[in-house]
Image (cartoon, rainbow, N blue to C red; front, top):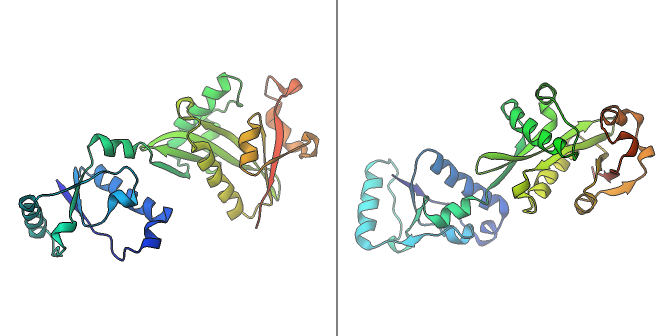
Length: 253
């Protein structure tokens, strides 16, 4: 099964933007999901998406494909045949390209169980406070997730504590995918949410000091944080000997 992909108004400065690449990748993934196995296009997909391989097609194959596609569409495809290329969505090269797809979004209620599993995996190792599934479901609006190939591989929460302050909590990426930039992309989304809510500051209690410094946070004395934040900490077995640092970031509104 073939799909025809034509990109209108291709200009060099547009092609180079990440939004445009994300849009093209979104179209390709939609084609894959509905069972399309081959994309025929006159667009330079291998230039738009790194490592997305394609091949030029012979004259006889071009004729067959164009006749087939023109027979089932009201829009007649008229292109320079020399510009046509074919991209097999099931090829090993394009599967490799797909592995890099990462989507960050606000969590849905159906994501609660996976979020619960990620959080409590880290809680078992003493790296995060445990949360009940019911708690996550009731507070699902606070959570964001990052997906890879359609599977949730990380989560984070933005919990409002005060009129101008929120906590970034429960930041976790699956162990085997750490170090690939997913945490940074997830945190960028969380910071964006905080800015849209017009929050002045966000903080976190963490041992991952270099990571949070990279995201624009700096250390502050814990006692400068409002007493309300210690409500959850009282349930931590390390409460009396906490080894986490308090880090904060002021937001530009």
